[in-house]
Amino acid sequence: MIVDEATELGSLAGEVIVLRRSQQHGQSIAHRTQLVDALLARSQLASATGTGLSERLGERHVGSPVFETALMKISEWRQALDEDLGSALGGDIFSSFQDAIEKAVREIERRTTTAWQTYAAQATPETSKEILDALADDPRARVTVIKIKRLAETTRRLREKAIPSIDEIREFDDATAELREAWSTLDVASLNEEIVAFLRAANSERGADLELLTSTVLDWLDQRDAKDHYAIRPSER
Image (cartoon, rainbow, N blue to C red; front, side, top):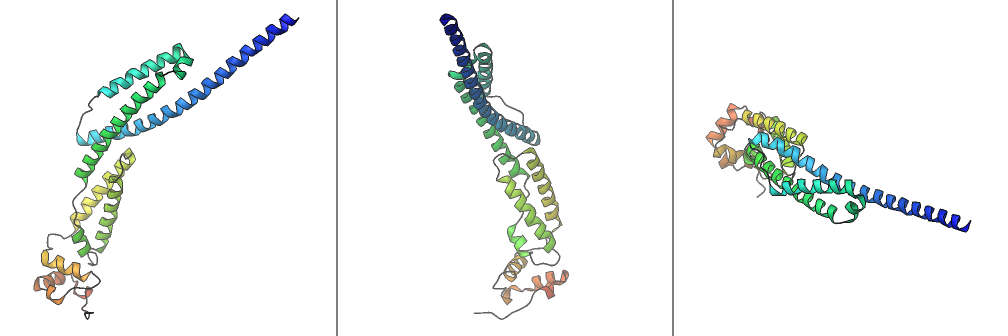
């Protein structure tokens, strides 16, 4: 009887040990799954964005030794999980695997960030803040200037992202296209230095000196029916 009970207790103890190990394995797997999922999310974002930018820039994918090492470590850890779960979770295999994947993801992110900076610089149209400020109160150009400034802020916000999503790249493309079209509608060709100097001063808190109101400026204002839009006021000096 005592021998039978001892045997039964031994069996129960064995089951408890197995259960504890199973729980530990479950917790360990869950923790490692979170780490892998985080790396996967970073990799997917950088890879998708990088592919989209490569197409826009006309560049081809270039391999790297860190990618080959990562693939090898993935294969090693998968094999370890199949052969000895405890060893795979408790040894150095996962640490080596994680380090290799982290390096590969960082390389993808670095390349994608560089590609984004290159593309954004090439795609953003040139505009002049000086001209926009000068035309801010011009009756014909005011609405367009407001639109240009809004679109310029959108492109600036997106350009500051290290790695934008594909949707954000599309938003950037749309904004730059609208910005280019809006800028083309401004009559910037007729703005010489005299006109810009007058408008910039007139739109300031101090106002423009009378000497800036040259015949060239008067002709330009007359052509745009904008003479009544500006007024002379006493100087505070």
